[in-house]
Length: 351
Ligand code: GDP
Ligand code: MG
Image (cartoon, rainbow, N blue to C red):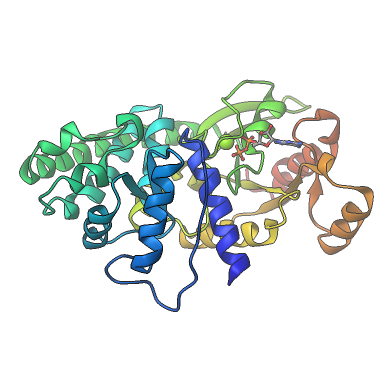
């Protein structure tokens, strides 16, 4: 429907901004079926190409993922660089990855996405696969052949295996110390990084760009009675994550398996927040993590009026309402965490 198309484009726009692009315009076409050759109707595509050229765009980004053949056909009509949603997300991952593991995983995903497109033997290939500003494998590396790419993929896989072994021992050590672990999960832009920063008074990079955190990072949080917990931040979850990216994305969430408790942070100022809760839970389900205890943390109460807040509190009696930018709102949350991790644990006699 029209509203769905507009929502999807709003999200694509936000993704594009996260990739450092300035969005000049958006257009959509509602069809019963995508055009197998051009995605859009050919007339619409030509109009789009002319318009994009006239307003001085560098890229045309498609919300749908393009088949290699579609990309090739579209490139015959469109002079500008083209990109699909998967490439855009990979580009953001590439820009944000800061640990060895994150970088290896992104490169792996990028190479896997490019592989099937390598048979396309004309200049549209470079327009199809070059990342923004040459991030990722980019145009030059594309000249290496399939065989070299296969070798590189095998190399990256080996490297990644080594890294996860190291992480496994680190995790085991932590588990042996029996420090309870809390992981912050939630849709992208919910306020996860802001919350962990405010809670621990540290400065893990927080901004309003999506995917600011690709790798999970951990902090310590001290409670009364000399109790402490480990609290970990995670990358933002996102709706309709392309199938090709799921592995790369999920493997950045390894640490969730250590968690005794999730803080599921929700941006209640976003009108789509109910859907976002669902998508996060769906991913947790796919990861077999849906049974881990969750605290639903409704964030950004400063952006809502009294009346709407009241209604939400009635609708979600179990949720805890906070503003991650205001530590004074954390009392109930901290009490609940403390109760779940310590009182309850002691009561069950499980330590
Ligand atoms: P993440 O993607 O879940 O890690 O979200 P971030 O912590 O990066 O926050 C996304 C944006 O929301 C940033 O611009 C934050 O400053 C903003 N933000 C986070 N919490 C609050 C809040 O309680 N109130 C308001 N007004 N903005 C917030
Ligand atoms: Mg974050």
